[in-house]
Image (cartoon, rainbow, N blue to C red; front, side, top):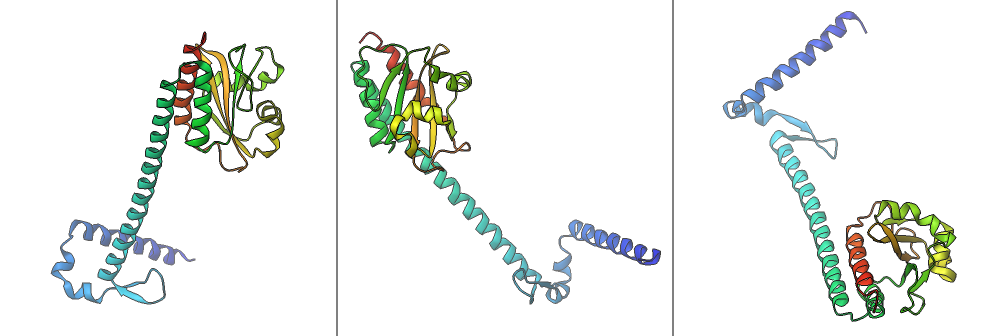
Length: 236
């Protein structure tokens, strides 16, 4: 490219900027020069033909409208999903309020997870001694010095639910013989004044059912409700 050609390009860009600035400061230009507006032709966004400036503006507005409709539909879907979760959590809370003993509370927790949340692979692993609870598929207790609890130390320290893949040792401790069926898992730490109380585990055969990017706010609220139910009925 010669110096003259480079200067020509620079001058052309400056001219375009000047024209753009002029039109921005004079929005009534095409009203005063309608014949120019009618002669303007622009490339069609989806083809090789040309269309008028007015047609192109209409096309752009339609595309923006379509994008807004898609975003609105997405927000409505999220809102409906949140409402559904809120309703399930409400039913979960009412069930716990009706429990008379800790064993009754555990039974209601299991029933709600299965019936309201479709959590058919759920386990409540408690830390410490719970002589009032009969070990079963859903709930059991382990000693505080159980070596398997070491893999959950970071979970208890964080104090927040974690979703995604779990270690083999974690799955085996939680789900036992069914661990091979678990593709993804949600681990919900239960604590009492910072001390480990237990772990609620929700498993799924689907590897994408529980993933690191999903919201865990409702799981955190559920953990608070379960912790209160278990500790308030310590002597029951």
